[in-house]
Image (cartoon, rainbow, N blue to C red; front, side, top):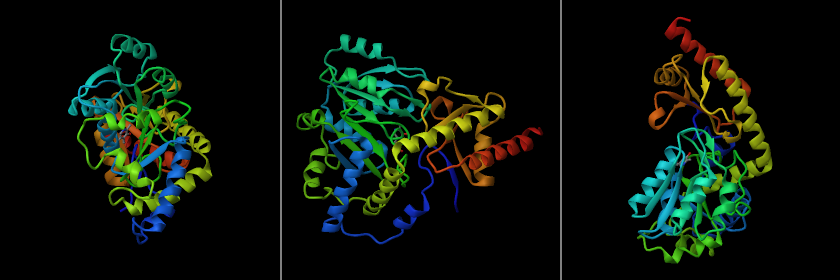
Length: 363
Ligand SMILES: *Cc1c(COP(=O)(O)O)cnc(C)c1O
């Protein structure tokens, strides 16, 4: 069975990567793996635009989020979560579970944060040790400005932790230049791979906090990843097949050029926006300055029954499109563009949506 994934992660896997994934593995304590791990890490540094360490974990994105909380902080530490949606809420939940003292700035879904609010909260709570933020908030399609936040957090003693899980590749990201201390990504979003690998970039400032953390950890202990990396290894058996495929995927992304990918995705996003409006959907985000290029979130108002539409497309045409999340579950359609789609794929999707409308509403 093969489905067209208009979902904001995972997307479809290109054939040259699926071919790699079908090959036999090598052993992760031998020299070949060491060379590949070094080479893959160097390419990841190019993607994050950093000279700092980038660790490879075996997990989906949430594992990486959890790892940042337990490696960089201690119980009782004051932290700030900039919450602009479903994934901001996940950071709040993770910080609370590990006993951090969480302050949050909670914004209406579809809005970005306000820098003055961040400055004010630092005035009020000068002991804040970390700021968590979502770069691209996949529940709403909002792209939060990291550069401007980094400029401010850099002047404090707090660490800036960014969930770039869906933000990577489809938008500019400069780890060093933007003064980010910990950036999280995972294989099934912009990296053209199946889920299973997560990437964590760490600044010197972040690394200096690792030995201070009193939260218990074993599998996620960054210090072990850093130590093992020196000999070209991961502490525990990595997802070898995915690391081998990552090598190929990164070649393809870097050859194509991140700037070109951003342009292509942004054009595709705009094409979808114009098409969906023609058939009666309303764009959830109107402000062009805060739009990401991972998905087009739209509201159906009274024109379409979203859960029915999603089932129709998936069951009848093997086209998977995501519903909303949280309070927008049944009200929003999120048309993801992580897969390598063309305008023709979009036209086809629009035709199928119109067919649904004709069948269901006789119009
Ligand atoms: C996909 C995603 C995650 C992680 O989800 P997993 O299912 O654990 O990979 C976290 N944050 C954002 C913004 C995401 O898009």
